[in-house]
Amino acid sequence: MQFGVNLLGLAQQPCDQDMQQRFAELLEWVHAVRDAGYDHLTMGQHYLTAPFQQFQPVPLLARLIPETGSMRMYSTLVAPLQNPVELAETWAGLDVLSGGRVGVCLALGYRDEEYAAFGVDPGTRLRRQRELVETLRRLWTEEEVTAEGLGFRLERQTVTLRPVQRPHPPIWIAANADAAVVRAARWGLPWNINPHATHETVARQVGLYRDAWREAGHEGEPTFPISREVFCAETREEAVRLAFPYLGEKYAAYGSWGQDRQLPGEESFAVPLAELAGDRFLIGDPDDCAREVARYAELGVDRIHLRTNWPGMPLDTALTGMRLFAREVAPRFRPAR
Image 1 (cartoon, rainbow, N blue to C red):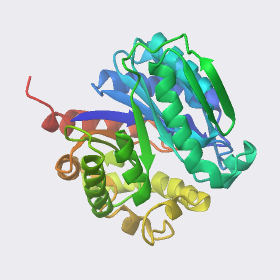
Image 2 (tube, rainbow, N blue to C red):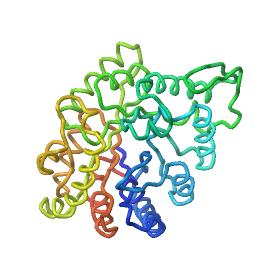
Image 3 (cartoon, rainbow, N blue to C red):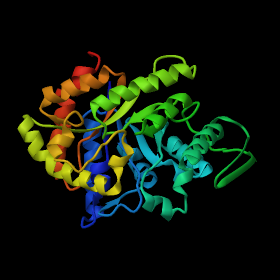
Image 4 (cartoon, one colour):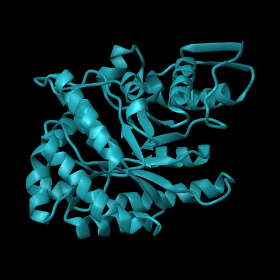
C-alpha cells in the first residue's frame, strides 16, 4: 500500500486568507509530508471557487518539484476544459522537470460556472473527455497524429517534447457515477475513487469496474487509487473535535456546488456531519484508521490519498494528524524492512 497526501487544505483557502503566507505554510507542509515518508502528493482543480481561493495545479506543482524529493505528484484536472495539445506539452514538460514523477487524473467536472466561463456546453462533456483521453495518449506515444475533435484539429502533428515516463505518465479517471466507472474500465485506465462515496458504494462500484475490465479484454488484475478524508488523533473523540469544524465547512461548500448530486443514489451532504462521516471518512485513533484502510485494501486499493488538512485548519493541527498516521498507521500496510 502506498500513501499520499492531498494539498487541498493549503492550496485552497478562504478568501480572507493571505495566500503568500499560506504558501509559506504549504511549503512547510510539503517538507513535513516528504520527511514523514509519504509516497506522493495529490491536488485538484477548480475555477471560480468562492468562498475559497485556490492555486492552479501547473504553477504550484512546478514550484514544488525541488521541494518534494522522490515523491510523485498527481493532479485532477477538469478534462472537458482542456486542450489535448496544451495538456500533452505542458505535462510532458512537468514530467521532464520532475524527473518522471507526475501524473494526471481526468475528471468530467460538475460546476456550471466553470463550463460557462470557458464557453463549453456541459452537454458535450462526455465527448470532450473521450476525445481528450484518446488524443492525449496518441500525442504521447505516436510520431504523427491526425485527429479532430471539439475545439481542436491536428493534421500530422507531433509533440516533440516527450515525457520521461514510458509509454506516458499515469492517466487516471475520476468517476462518481456507475457509467463513468464502467467507462474508465473499458478504457483500461485506473479509476481514481472519489473521497465522498460510502464504503458500500465503493465496494459495489469496484465490482462493476472489474466486470467491465474483464469484458473489455484487459489483462491482469486492476488496482485502485482512492482519496479519503482522514484525520488521525490519539483518541477518536479528539479526532472528531479537531477535524469536524473544517470538514463541515468544506462539505457545506461541496453541497452548494452540487457535488453530492454527482454521486449515485439519493446522496445529500445536507445532513449532520456525524451522519455524513459514517462509512465514508477515516476519522479516529490509529486503530480506527487502520481498520478502515484494511477494508479498502481488501477491495484492491493499492494507494490512498489522505485529505487530512482542510481550508482554515491550523498548520500545527494538520501536521500532528499527518505525522501520527505516518508513524502509527502506514507501517502496518508496508512490507517489513
